[in-house]
Length: 105
Ligand code: HEC
Image (cartoon, rainbow, N blue to C red):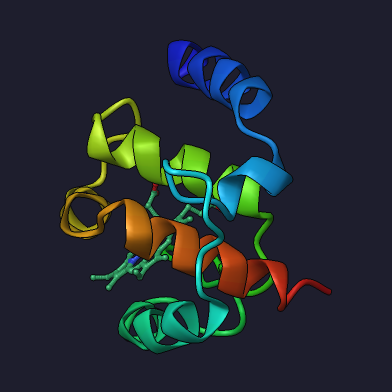
């Protein structure tokens, strides 16, 4: 657990919110595509957190990209989110980050 927290601190420094909404080639993610993709997340992620599933409404883009990288690489172990993270490519992650950036409160 401590290792995971320390690793996330490193990732957090690596990706800023401004970088998180960009694809690897530097073009911005499409927030409308992100809104479309986020419908899939709502099956588990409700507007309010539950004990098992945190809310992702208005999540910070940099934190979001970090969390997805951690689930995909199993630094954070969660089978459901590992599947989700591995199913999303660079374009999808940038689009979701761009959508979350428009939705912060
Ligand atoms: C099958 C259910 C399910 C689906 C679908 C799902 N998630 Fe999750 N998600 C979870 C659970 C459960 C957790 C908490 C896992 C943990 O304890 O680390 C989580 C955690 C997260 C976190 C970490 C939140 C935090 O506060 O650290 C993010 C970010 C996230 N999900 C994003 C998404 C996105 C984006 C989608 C849609 C593309 C999605 N999830 C779809 C179940 C799901």
